[in-house]
Length: 143
Figure 1 (cartoon, rainbow, N blue to C red):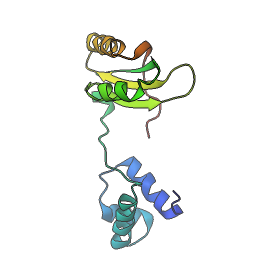
Figure 2: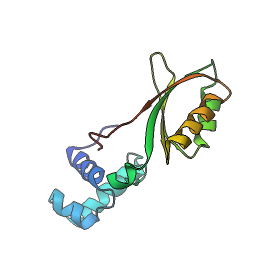
Figure 3: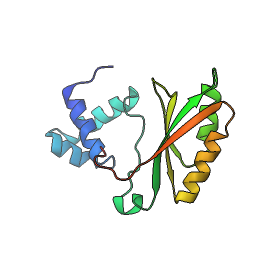
Figure 4: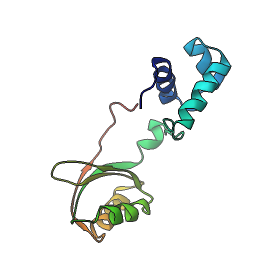
């Protein structure tokens, strides 16, 4: 799906702050408020903008424990494991990947103890053959 340069600029502004008022977006883009609103609605209609999300402050996030969990699955278990992972509240993102692992699961927990329990829970899912976890020590860039 291709988008115009103006629509790309709008998306980049929304990446900074998805709650930015349309009037402010219009001012930053040098267009009218109605034009900005129309472009937003078009991007939503086309399914390019699927939703607006919460980004937490570093002061909150630094109290959370985050990890990448690399997961190897048995044959034909992808759909069922993904369904089970969606039920675990600490699972934030699931990526299907190529290489030695089948997916990368982003996990965020309130403590090391809870993270350990989540990793054990994921490892015990039917179809999961093995996991490898990496704790995230700091975030250097988050767009």
